[in-house]
Image (cartoon, rainbow, N blue to C red; front, side, top):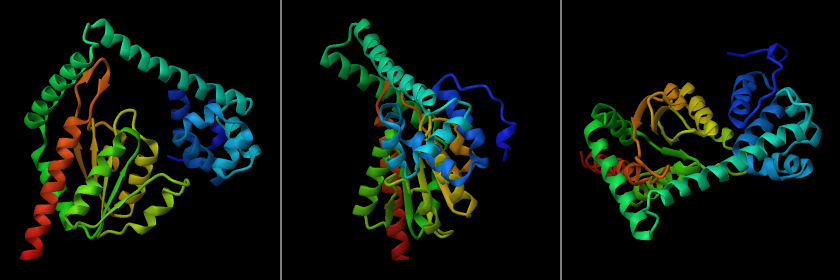
Length: 283
């Protein structure tokens, strides 16, 4: 729902999550340049945390004054106050990974062999869960949509990027036309216009979910494109803008998660699509 910027609560976001929520609430009402700032900030939180106003404005393609106005729109006195939230997120994230490593050390399995053994065991658990819990109807629908598509567009950022990159490689080896979408130059949004109803969009995103991926999928879905999403929960924000949702969960070791089960599912999808395309071309 579109909201009036002046009607938003003046409370200042106190952490990165509340900041993201504020941006999400205001995004529909933001002028073009402020929305450009918002997208850049969410896609490059480390640069916002560490850069100068001039450096960030140049990279985002806006004027420094626009960055200040963006911060004030979110309830801050100025850019520096907003930047502190991004800096806190950066420090917190580093501390979070330190805590994860501490958990592994405290478990007494911090030798290389112990770490490997635990990840193998967790991966076995996740693979068994996938086999028991996979939604075979959703899987078959996904294969049908991807097999019938003229072009398969692939999108995943951060932890999900290796998944779509692997699909791009494997499907390409089988002669399936794919397009790997990347967030470069801040022009991801514009690429949605090149996806039509005869194509399919495959997206992957996991908690805390990439807002850029959700937004892109939403626009494609609104254009009538078949959107197949690979995510870790049917309650994921990507589920609302997907034709079909495939759910996969990775068991953790010391709060770290591998991609073994996710890659297994992705490989199965690629092989099934390649096989379906082969038989379709022969019939």
